[in-house]
Structure formats: structure tokens, C-alpha cells
Amino acid sequence: MNYREASLQDIDALLAIEQQSFRSPWSRTMFEKELALQFSYNRVAELKKERELAGYIFCWLAPPEASIMSIAVKPEQRRRGMGTYLLGKTLEDLKAMAVREVFLEVRPSNFSARSLYQRFGFFELGVRPRYYQDSGEDAIVMKKEL
Image (cartoon, rainbow, N blue to C red; front, side, top):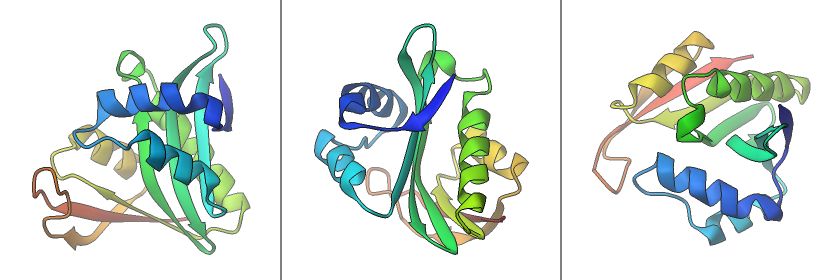
């Protein structure tokens, strides 16, 4: 497994994973802008043998805080520890960069993501009412202290 910074050459693969993972996926332009941000921490998990992306994570950095903006795993790679791998490596890196608190929003209906975050010590901090525009669903705000 290669854990590396995302690049513009990864956008097609990022878009494919994004579109398979979310009801309101990010666009090509959104990924391009994200990759250009000075405060963006982004990584991909690349399968060595196949040389294809299995997942990604994008965060915004404002030490001592960070926000996880998006994390996704290719459908055929789910339930194989890929999300655990991505989140674990990212939290290690964030801690080394003097980040002390990590925040994220998650849909209440996304039980697998909530379970993953809880295993890493994230706890529910509050709710953002009607946060998701595609469904009007609330977002649970979660936090982890590093």
C-alpha cells in the first residue's frame, strides 16, 4: 500500500470513488481547488500491485485544529480495513504536525462511518440541523483529541 499526497493525475480516480460513495459528490473543479489549497492535507491509498487508488482522505489544517472534509474508499475495497488504514495514518500525521483536535461532520444514517470514527475515539459534539442539502439530513459533529 502506498500512502501518498494526491495529485492532479489522480482526479479521474478520485472522481470515480467519490461518485460511487456519495449522493452529492464533489466535482472535478472542487477536487482541483482542494488540491491547490495551502491548508489542505490530502492523501490517497494506492494499491501497489494494481497501481490504482483504493481510497482517499482530505482535511483542512489550522493547527492546533484540523477538519476532515472527506474520506472515501472504493466500494470493492470496503470492509477490508482501508478506511481504518487511511484514518489511522492521517491521525498520526496530524498529530506530528501539532494538531491537537480533529473535527468532522457525518450523516446520522452513515452507521459504518460513525462506527469507524468512534473506534478511533471521536465523540459526538453536537448536531448541525439540515446540514446536507441533498436530503435535508442533519449532520453529527464529531471531535477527537490527539
